[in-house]
Image 1 (spheres, rainbow, N blue to C red):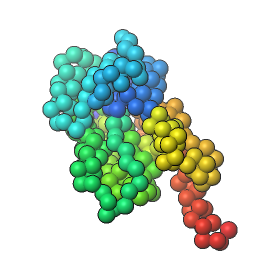
Image 2 (cartoon, rainbow, N blue to C red; image 1 turned 120 degrees about the vertical axis):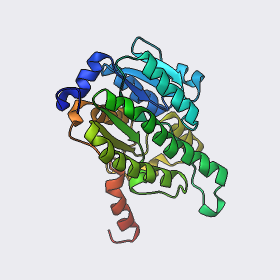
Image 3 (cartoon, rainbow, N blue to C red; image 1 turned 45 degrees about the vertical axis):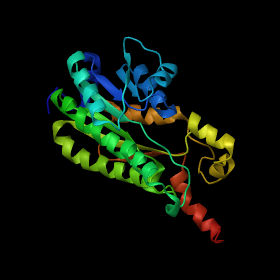
Length: 271
C-alpha cells in the first residue's frame, strides 16, 4: 500500500487536504455526518439530489463543498468523479453512502414495481456506482475508507419488501468490496442505523405511521437513536482508529437488535 504508515494513512490524507464525499447530505443522517467529518478536520464534499435542500442543511466553507448529485444516474456520478479528479489535487480519501429512499410498511402483494425499482436504484445501485467511481481515486492516493449506511434491516429485515432487501444486498456488497479493495489500502464498512430521529422519521411519528412508545419499549436502551450518534460511528470508521477494521456492519440501534429476541420470547408468553 502507498502512503506510508497504514496506521496513520487517513491522518496524512486529511492533513494533505484530501476529501471525503458524503451522498444524501441534505437529509438528517447525511447532514449530521457531513458536519461531524467537517468538525473532524476533513474537507467534505457534501452531495445531494436537491441543491436547495442541501444549501438549507449545510453552509459552505473552505472545507465544505456542496455539489448536486443524482446517484441513480450514472452520468451524474461520473461527472462528480471527474470534477473531483480535476479540481482536488489531494484526491479522495473517503466516501460515505447515505443517499437512500425509504418505504412504508406494505404487503408484498401490494408492492408497486416502479417504486421498488426506484428504491433499489438509489439504495443499492447508487452506492455501488459511487464506490466504483471513487474507489480508484482512493487507491491512487494510497488508501481510504468507505462507509455504507445500511440499516437494522440488513441484519434483521422488517416487512419492508423493497427497502429491506436493498439494505441486505448493500451489506453483502460491503463485505465483498472490503475483500477486493483491502490489498489497495481501502477499507469498506457499513453502519446499520436503528430507528433514528431524522426529520423524516419525526414526521412519521407525528403522523402516527410509527409508534415511538412501542419502539422504545422494545429497545434495550429505551430510546431512539440521534443522528449525531450515527455520525460518530461514521467518524470512527472513516478515521485511523478503525485502521484494522474492514468488512463489518456496525449496528447503531440503542439495542433494538439485542432486544428483538426478548420481544419475540415475551410475545410467546414465555417470560
